Length: 136
Image (cartoon, rainbow, N blue to C red; front, side):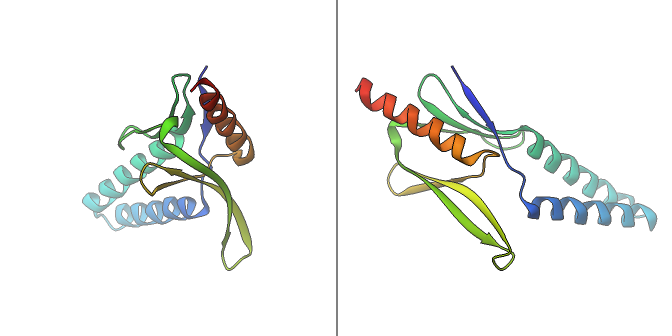
């Protein structure tokens, strides 16, 4: 059975959306339609990526990172995953602490994931990795 986790939206993403919206409104206000249309398109692409981004643990033994229709899907087989770490990163000078997951895979490759429920994601991933090891 596939297990789907949604991506946590970072504060910087909200900031980008606010800045793009302000530029778009100002461009239309000052009758710069081309700039306004480009910013509207950028907003649509960013919002689409935010809404549709997921991490999926598949039944056939893959971690699938989907970042929306406009970006390439990244698939990592469980056999390539060597380590999973739950990390904490201080943001805004240590005022806001956020959690992320660092997945080690392949030959010294890393992937940083930010699911909404990081502990639950790590537990599900480790459980699937242990199940894979028992089968081998």
